[in-house]
Each structure stands twice: as structure tokens, then as C-alpha cells.
Length: 204
Image (cartoon, rainbow, N blue to C red):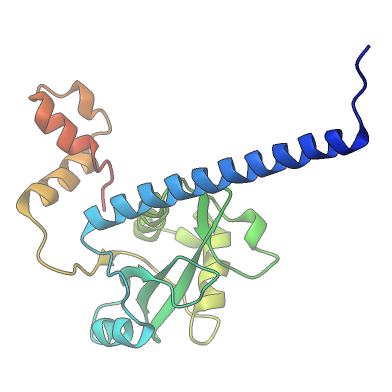
């Protein structure tokens, strides 16, 4: 009959926790790497742009104009900088357990939608902003946006991205096709072209 000492049991449990932590870290690295790849494809991800530089870019833009940049705060990876009726503002994106969501006040935070990627998050709120009544469609977004707005009451819309450079015609066509259909695999196109379309399956 074999007996296992409490020390060896603790060692096994400790090793199991280390393995789980390593797997979680690897999963996070994979999610973030995938998110970065998609963001770089957008043309409206500005990387290490500062808040002051984002404000300058947005200063004369129309309400709803936005860009995504790296967050200057260590606890966050990305920030959406957007133009409101009261001027430019910033909304941080929170990452936790493989999901991205908008940062917000504690009471609203658990109710906010979560997304597998930053681009999916932005696409959702762009579509919401373009709908006839986005506050009714997602009151949590309205509350999160109000918390980030300059005076706490300004509505924040995301309607038009600011590109770092003029997008390639192929990319603009890809977005136009994605706006028309989500069944790209069924289109009578060469495999190479279908692969290009599915590599960025968003309409923003």
C-alpha cells in the first residue's frame, strides 16, 4: 500500500497551480497577440500615440471621429480617443480573462459587453452609434461613455475612424464586402481572395 506524505501532496498542488498559471499567461499572450494583429490591419490603430497627440489629431474633427491607441496607464492595454460635442475624450479598454471591454464605473462594469478582440468591441459600438437610438440599445455603453466624457453628461459616439494613412483600396473593398455579407466563404471567389477577406472580417 502506498502512502503520500502531506509534503508531496502540497508539492503536487503547487506544481498544478504553476502549470495553470503558465497556461493562463500563454493564453493571455495568444489573445493579445491576435488582438494586436487585427488592430494593425485596421489602419486606425495609432500605437504609442499620447493623449495630447490624440487630442491634437481629433481637435477639428467631427463628433464621433475616433482612433485607438496604446493606453498610457499601466493597468490598461488600449484606449479609444474620440471626439464629442464638448471636445476630445478618452475611454480605456480593459482586458481580463481573454476578454476586452470598456472601462467604466464599478456599478456599470459587470453589465458591459465583453469581446474576444478590440476590433470586435469597436465594431459593436460603431454599429450601436450609427443605430437610431444607441442609448436605448445599450444603456451601459451610454453610462460608460458619460463617465469618460469631459463633463460626465456628453454622449460619446463612435462613427468614423481616423486612419494613420490612406487605406489601401483592397482594404476598403474588403470592408465594403464585409458590410454586405458575413458569408464570405460562400462567394464565388478564388481561395486567395477569400482568405484575404476572412483575414479581416469586420466592417469598420
